[in-house]
Image (tube, rainbow, N blue to C red):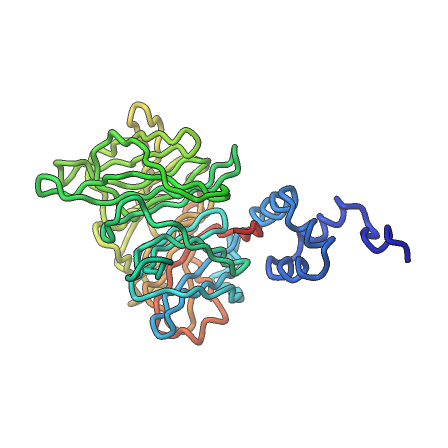
Length: 384
């Protein structure tokens, strides 16, 4: 066999990439190790974008669990049903990856197939562990410990991970909290761009006094997070951070957001989905309320009220649920706070007024634990 034949594929590159793009991410990782030719092709930017496009067409459910017994963060995915019409539906779980964590666990964010959480790590040259953000990819099993923030504060750190589609960049926005006049406010806003040769934080100016929260979403290159206005216990807002220009703005909500508020993508627009003042959603709940931004510059919103059908109380029974988010504009998804057997999520179709219980097979080993449930998870084979 000639050298040319040994180093070329028997099919055109574009056809080979199309075939590879249909494989699961774990298979891509194995193929990268098979030979230099495959490794080179499967590391190309155009293949990464093709794979992500295919993955976006088949979004999944992602379940994340903090397992203190083994000091690991565990990720599991399953197919995300589209408009399930049966009263019950079953999908299989796919165990993805485990990542180490210390006793100092902090809040997490997930976007474009990547996951970010805060952890205490031992860094070279330092005697004691320091708090740093960690980026991981559940699909590939890769993780990357980021530099510590410019501030040395450990507590009150809030981070949001976003994807900027124009430049195809992942950026992490982080901030600290400081006590000013007996009130906690967000300070020291800083940004890190992943994929650069030297990872470093840079301070960005924010002229909007506010207190950040863990409620957030990234839509079309803009990070949105719920916040409270400084000096008010009832006036809330959504702070907007444009990942491309790295500028802040805000949309006033005009009243307090209840604890159940979840930020959602409503046909490309920011939505606030809520159900009462409590985080918990029980069988006694009768409706959901959705507020959608009509005009951000004018701080205008419009709302929908979704009344639950009588079957809701029977399906939920004595279980305590939380809002996981929305799929499209028609389905509200809820998940139990604590995992029981069999594990499931609930789909409420707001058009058909139907309730569907979707069982997740393969989580039997985690009986009694709790999961964070994320919607619209996509596999991404981009290397860190």
